[in-house]
Length: 218
Ligand code: E4P
Image 1 (cartoon, rainbow, N blue to C red):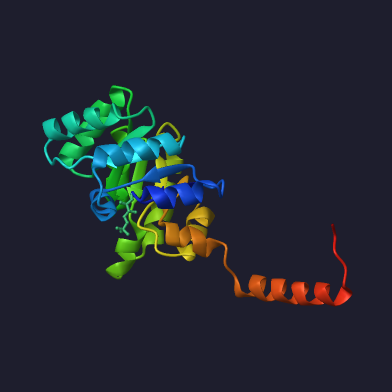
Image 2: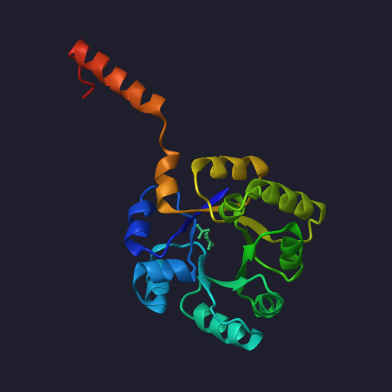
């Protein structure tokens, strides 16, 4: 399962690259706004740091606007993935941009029917939002299971399931158990993945016992 980082904060991305776990980046208008920087310069900088796909989201809501913005964003760097919303015009834009050879991430997916449409429109990635579904009392992970089950029936559909709106390590584990292709993680969740209280306790014990021996490996 690939790990994308869900942020437009370049300093955060830089600090996580050394982990070796960064396979790509996703951004959205909220994350760009939170960064306080210009979208184009930010996407360009991220694309220079990360070899994998970097999602940059269109903001137009009509087909022509999405196509114009998508083509513009794709010129920023070869690893830009154009992100479009799951609307009728968004899926038309997905089909056209895909046929032009661009990678497209269809975002704001909340149902298996929507995911099926995105795959039929040729999406490179479908982004189901698990956290936002959990927030309204539905099961985000049930949606992931259902999308994967549907896609598995139709091997000619090449759309990758990109689990988005991730809130905690359990979402990551459940996405992996379900067989998702990608999970996009806020930096805070990446850091949480390393943690277990028994690991800390074990290190403290080993360190104390080692000190008692008076030895040193080097
Ligand atoms: C990523 O592609 C999505 O835009 C993002 O994961 C949404 O996360 P949120 O629900 O925490 O805003």
